[in-house]
Length: 136
Picture 1: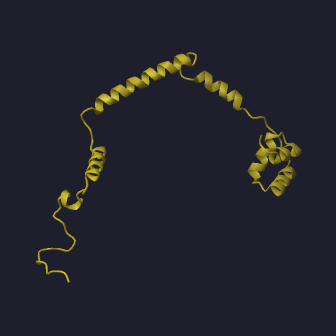
Picture 2 (picture 1 turned 30 degrees about the vertical axis):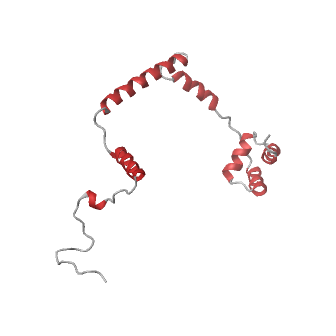
């Protein structure tokens, strides 16, 4: 059985020291790993301001190189307009009977069936062939 404790001792209480609460590493490998982990958590105030300045300068140089390589576009407005022209989808009218056929036969959702038909200009036969055909 356990020994009798003095009445001032509370079960499970510690002295409050960190050393008492954290078990000491037994091997040299464990001590090295614990030191490495504690150094990761410690805030480094010695060179944090210098790193921010270096990072900002590196970002500025990289941005300058990108604008030179990109043909001199200042803020990318020209490239955005070109992308909008490419993304424009043509409006395709899709028959609901065709959508129902794709849902029934291919077991697709209504949205996917509609998208499949729109990508094939509303042609059911082409949509079925492209869905069933293996990707080469």
